[in-house]
Amino acid sequence: MEEKSRSARASAETQPRGVEQIIKAAIDRGASDLHIKAGDVFRARIDGKLVPLTKQRLTPEQTRAIALRLIVNEDDRGRLDKLHEYDCSWGVPGVGRFRINILRQRSSFMIVMRVIPFDIPTFESLKLPSILTTIAAAERGLVLVTGGTGSGKSSTMAAIVNHINQTHQKHVVTLENPIEFLHRDINSSITQREIGVDTEDFRAGLRAALRQDPDVILIGELRDVETVDTALKAAETGRLVISTLHTPDAATTVSRVLAMFPPEEQVIARLRLAEALQAVVSQRLLPRADGHGRAAAVEILICTAAVRDIIRDANRTPELHNYIRDAREQYGMQTLDQHLLDLVAEEVITYETALAAAMPSVDFELQMRTLRRRSRVTEPAAAAQSSVPRKR
Image 1 (cartoon, rainbow, N blue to C red):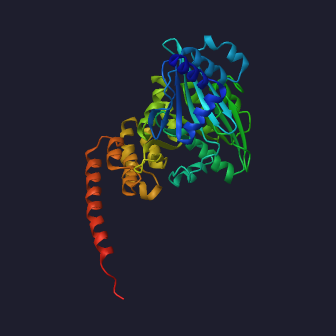
Image 2: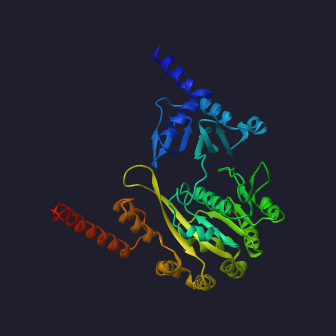
Image 3: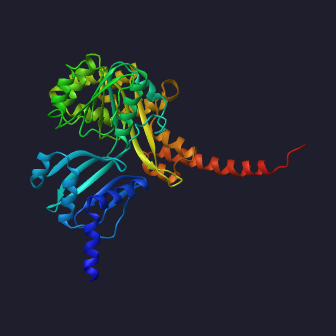
């Protein structure tokens, strides 16, 4: 009898209403992602940690039923059992919008749902450095937003497009897989195209975009050398191109882009990148000290004449880190370590979190220890000062 009761509860969870209630409960708790897998419970990533939402494990049949519900395209639903990986977007009024990835593991289905906020993010809401307003105002060039999976790249790119939309009269073409944030036309005209639905792939969509009178082109990801080459051509012909890479910092980003080209083309590619690159924004999300949500730690490279000279010389790429550090006051750049120190000083993140996220460096550890000593000295002094009776 108890077994039947458990089975009934698990079955109810996979019904449309039950699934939506679980998803909504996860969003209410601040989830960024949901994991649905055969043989496991519903899980959600909350404040960076993957936590269980239910007690009953899902069967392969239940997971398949949920996958079918999330696929909107009828043709794709009909070939579900032949799919190995599948991307789409899904939304329900009153619940939310999601980027969906359906995959196979151990011959059963798994579903990962990324929560897409209804509100378009801004630089202020994401607490990003103000220099991004200058980057977003660039007339031409290549802007790369980089970081690992789940580092907030999509939100930052959406904030850049939103800033352009609010402050400029331009035509912005986006190529996304799938479309995440839905931009409405304000001062700019925003054309959003989904890969596999509105255009065949990134390469075809990008080539077509060049004939669509764009001022700004957003590419969901630079996946291959053909896409990189076309993106550089678009930047060279006077467009602002915004895209992403899975790289941790500015120096690695430059090296990764060039490594996509065949060895015999890398000298020319280096010269082209030096001229076209406008900025690199590398970021990661870290747990906040108060335990509520995550904060963005950001490295920013602005391409000055000196930076272009460094990029042109293959032997000087490692110099980028020190240049960014030294040019902070003059140009508004910052290394990841510099921003981590700021976040600790502002008590946004903890000392331990910053130390774990920083690039391996003796200097950084010394600076962190100095910062801690100062805070320990300052706090008692401030407390003593506040306890001194004021003269009347």
